[in-house]
Image 1 (spheres, rainbow, N blue to C red):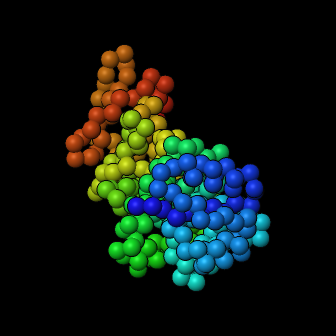
Image 2: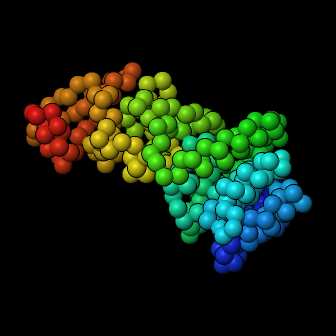
Length: 260
């Protein structure tokens, strides 16, 4: 299905570049562009695009205020935030936003965002009330969570994002550029692209990067198994009792913490 897109950015260079990239993608029609929030609201009403690529930092009315006013006017559209500030995008994902893009926009990430928007548009046409509720949660929760660590994590399970308490996370792993989260009651993938990005949302005293491919909750360690060269393997409290290696540099920290 074709996707009708609106681009909103107060910088002309940013608008032009994003419009150019979108026009090069199959099944995408750029129906308009705006340079400020008021113009964006007017075009949302007159053009009714499927998705708006919305800058966060704009003078006068920022992207979140545009989203709030669009909701008040029942201007239903899917939102992809475009920002140079990753803290806004991470919070947007906590309430199941379609996607976020960091400037400068990467073409591969843009294609992923369009595919996600396309799936959401198809789903929302069958359930418009649900789309409205998601947008309402987005503008309410993101506005109050821009600078603090979140007590909840959004875990993708199938096509849904399920919110789980951060302290329920047992461990996270990175493989094939996908961050997998294993929690007490569910397993899924994270919206974060790296373990560093995920760890930035969490308490560093509790969540340790014990290996380049693993982030663990030290309160969810079941056993510490000695390994060769005086290293350790952690056996976690998940159903599979997953064994996680501890890197040489983190072994010293673990020994000091446990006074071994």
